[in-house]
Image (cartoon, rainbow, N blue to C red; front, top):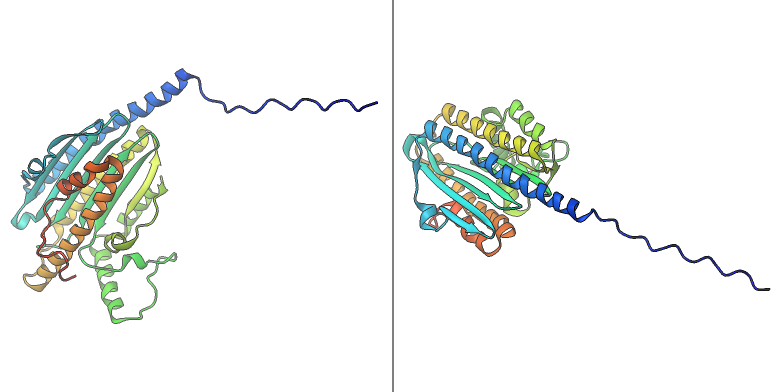
Length: 305
């Protein structure tokens, strides 16, 4: 007799998918988050700009309108860009406030470049909300090179091997004493600990970043939007405090070298913004970056560092 035939194979496993109504609900949640986040972030940033305007006597610049980005459509999103400056002792070379609200993604960005009359760090803050995450970037950019990118896992900067090492250490020590105090470090770490870190910066971007950079992805949700909005507000308040208490630089070479370093940093930051905005908005990204970055002083690009 023959053995009995083998049992039939089990039915192929099927990938379970939520019902159509549930899938639509998930998409609606994403769209609702982006829409609500856009209003929250834009409102918070408007308040920050008003604080800076009041404290530093900002004057409106027409540059975004000249570039066609004061009020604009980009993909399925609507955007606005405002720019300001404050000459003389108020010492704000450029301040831009960008807000873009789309169906499934929104962005708010604040950039404040100090003038060369004082060496307060520049402020860059950006939040991007999507269905996947709330991406937060905040950086206080130092006004002189301190080799912060060489920081090791132990928190140190290695042993001195060149004469320049002592110069860089002097920059770090001065910044730590005047701006990046332990309580500021603790504030930055408390925010970083809430999210997943982004890949480390590379190339020139790493050279210009400050020691307290926040570059994380927070979970998608209203709580994360609130965290990001408050973090940007806190960062601006710290920056305003530094502007109020920092003495002007002595006239001469220190102002000149600070200006030259700033100009190279602004050109580098423009490149970073082109990459970031192009990844989000395609072919319009470069024009948007140019309007947000402000006019660059080509006479100093490639000059002294």
